[in-house]
Length: 140
Image 1 (cartoon, rainbow, N blue to C red):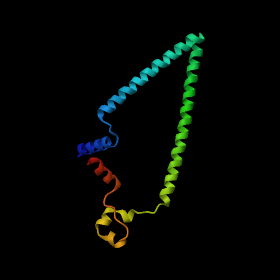
Image 2: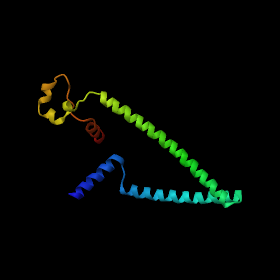
Image 3: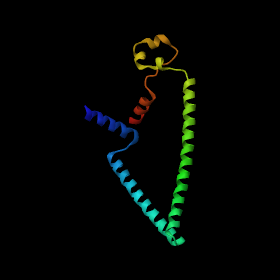
Image 4: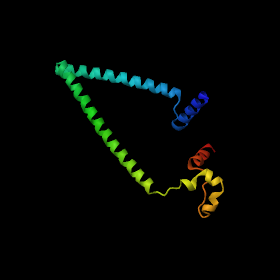
């Protein structure tokens, strides 16, 4: 049972994102290579600044200043992205609060029971959900 559940979860992740075990291993390898290159870049930058300034202390301070500026830029971008995400979420929640609730009218079990035709003959019933219709269209 757990094996089939694990397989279902794996298939769901693969269907949604296209990620495989090979992709995860390759991404880990890429991350390791990028971190190694970054470390060599930092050492080379430190050595270059040490040669240019004639002092290893000033070189270390310059490298620390560069990283502080990069961290500040990243923090500003992160704060702006958080603010935009929060604003979008507030607007979406407000739009959903204003939208009429259709849960009791759109329920599949309620529609199959025959009560849907009694409640509203003028409202056409959906035969498939939008995701199911899209899945059928993509698989055809």
